[in-house]
Image (cartoon, rainbow, N blue to C red):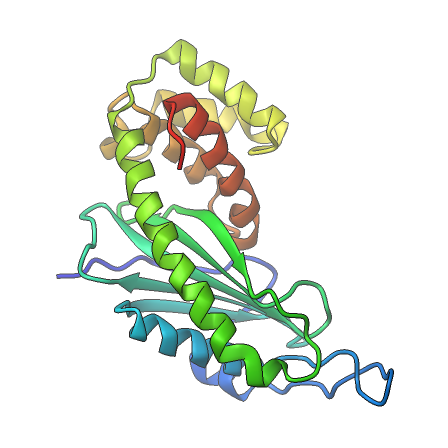
Length: 251
């Protein structure tokens, strides 16, 4: 039986069904130079469908999904929980998708994990589709996504190694407190949330994190960071870098 996460998108977007994403309008190309337009917006649904197709080709099955659009429809953020026959009992893999029509960010994919007991999300690495929104972008999209998904498979394997190392690394209160302060320097958390992270470490909201390990400390942070997927995207990548150093691992 595959566990499912309660994927939620609190990132300034309206939660929408997959069909709404597929039907969302795409603005016309803008800018003009050398006889061609300079910016070709990608349809959000076009990106989503091709990501789904290439995930399936890579042996990943989508078991849960969530999608969000900004009020003007210019920006899309989606999350897909995927299983590939190597599902853990306590966390699942999540693929995040971003696309914009307003040049705010390029189409991109990010691989992360979500903890079943608390739905904490932690994104581990971003793979941007390295192709500007210029002429022939639609033609080139499938090949770009294929390459990106291939890299996501590697990211998933590294994430499994990382989490296993976190679970095996014991952490004293002194080391935890030192790491929490270092997290402030690394911009993992703002100063306003330090007290909450400390409280979560000392008295976890979930008994699964009572063991004094780096995995429990990690979830002390993600418990406080959850509630905004895009916020978690930036913060948890920095958190991984910090705890990788604490645990002495190179992922």
